[in-house]
Structures are given as structure tokens and as C-alpha cells.
Image 1: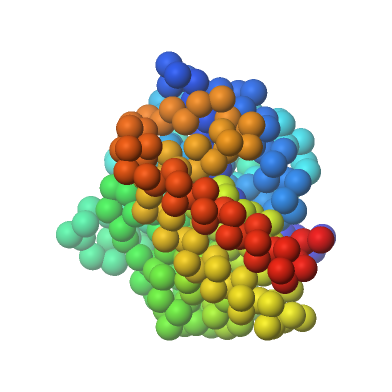
Image 2 (image 1 turned 90 degrees about the horizontal axis):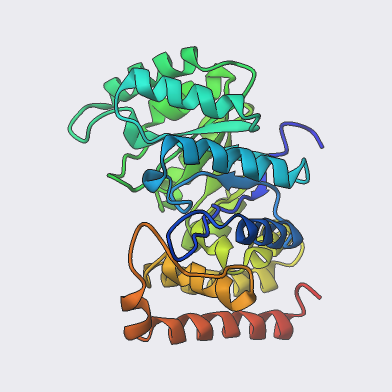
Length: 311
């Protein structure tokens, strides 16, 4: 594979399974990794918000990243974040340690570069300092993470990242096709790839030249995202139907994620527990969300069968 092509396609944002004591369940994590890879994904995004990284200790963060790398064993490339610190020197130390694990790229969190009231000039200045401090032996990326607040990247930041030659991956959460189209133009000819996290704009973004998908719904039906990214040009009518389903199904993210995804993984036999450090599971079961999720998955299976995709 051309190294500039490895960041295309589908990159699941990995869950972290916990046992009932909320300690990391390593055996369940192995099953999850195998499940992603069997679905045909192009790479894995470990130690991200879906992994509950803001609720991991620094030691757990590094242990989790190393475990994923060791178990994947080169089957697909792995990127990781763990970028949760506030102070710039602490961030540099944190990112340096993630880089030392051997990941393909270290993914920074956009809201760590500045406080909510600070300008994009502050973001760019801090980004430049961090970039210079992290070894150039590893690729770099940015995730527009919504926690603890959402900071979208300015055109100047995207342009600088593309021109720097250091950046490989942006997990785009702007959810606006006009912005994605503009970003695709800004990164054209560079090694920087745009991975859309939004199912509703995914097909139009692929048509505009975006490079793939990296979002929470890969924890339910990654194989459908793989199919869409691989086949939207050859089978446009089927792609429209799959896209409409994925767009609607993406609303399930609001039904107590990541509990809903962990419950689904438990139903597959991958997870032993739905335990999370982010939230309790009581509301998910009392509000009929589980039934909604089951029907969403069932509809996806019907669409696969009727369209003859993934046969």
C-alpha cells in the first residue's frame, strides 16, 4: 500500500470495555479488535473519546495504546490520541509518550490548543510549538473532539497542517458539507487526509473528495461504512440507499452512547459488560433505548439483504 493511501477508508473510534469494577477488560478488547478487522476496516483509532480517554489515568492510556498495537500486530495501522492535558508542557510530554508506543500517527485534540474564549491565533501558535516538540518519526493528526468543548479548525490551521508535511489525519466533526469541501481543497496534494465523523454528510463528502469515515457508528455496522467508501462510485443507486440508512441510523448516537454501543457489543458476545466510566446504564434500559437500537440494527440487516451488499 502507498503510505499516502493508508489513511483512506474507515477508521473506527474504539470503545474501551470495562468489567463491573470499571477496570479495563482486556479479553473483551481482543474480541472487539478482531470484530473491527473482520469487517474490513482500514485502520483503528485507539485511545480516543469513545475509548473514554478523559477517564483513563495516564498509565492506563499508555497501556491501552500498547495493548491495541500488540494485539493488532500489524494487521491494520493504528492511530491514537490520549491528548487530555491542559498545560502545554504536559501536553508535549503526554503526546511524546504516545508517539513512543509505535502508533502510525498521534492524534491531537483541537480543544486542547486554547481555552474557549481564546482566538485561532492562539491555537495556531500552540499547535506550532507542539508540532515542533513531537518527534518527526511519527505522523500527526487532529480530532475536533466535542469534549470538554468543541473547537473547529480554522482554514489557516488546516492549511498550515497540510503545508507542514507532518500531518496525516483530521477527524472532521464540523458536520457541514460546505466546510468539508473547502477543507478538501486546502489539503489537496498533501499527505493530510480528511476523515468525516458525520454519517449524514458522508456520501456527499466522499463525492467531494474526502478520504473516509471515522465515527461512532463504526461500533455498530463498520462493514456498511466500508462498503459505502469502497463502492459509492461503482454502485451509486445502492450507495444512495445505504447512505440514507446510515444517516438515519446515526441518530442512535444520542441514545446514551457509549452505553448503547457497549450493549450492542455485549449482544454479539464481544463484551461481558456495558460498564462505562462516562455514564451509568440505567437510563438506557428504562427509556426503551435498547429496543430502538435493536430495531436500527435489524433494519440494517434487512437493507443488506435486499440490496445484496456484503454477500
